[in-house]
Image (cartoon, rainbow, N blue to C red; front, side, top):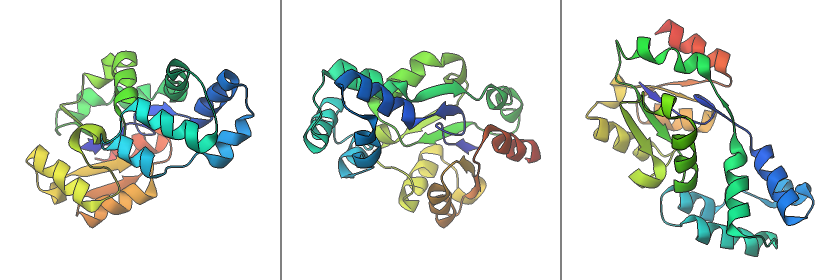
Length: 194
């Protein structure tokens, strides 16, 4: 069993990030909504090729926004809303039948944050495959094959849940059984059918 973290186990909301950055920098939130993108620097951070200071320097240059690194970090970590406690409550039952792993596109700053905020959830995973540590990210099919190799499991034996249709398509291209889940209720629906 392979789960995405953000949107499957942990609630996220990028609006919270943008609102924090706008307040801290004194600019309109629309700047972030209209100009922040999942660009190459974002992806490089998620595979461990850029650290957070380098990434925020890039954001400062591309957005024309200046603020202390702590404010960038505080805003970045405002992403989390609440964990999906109903999903986490299923973990003990799931682990009676499956190895429970996570594969998430993330970065060192977010990983440190969710590990500190939600230890009662994160400690239940048998393995965590975090993109900035494994050096590859979804939706690349090769990334899924690499994670399956790390799990010592054939892709067709792995069930994967993600809130991104693009990531689900990548998983299916790698021969995983993948489910697109867009809410806690949908995640629970899939888990209850396994």
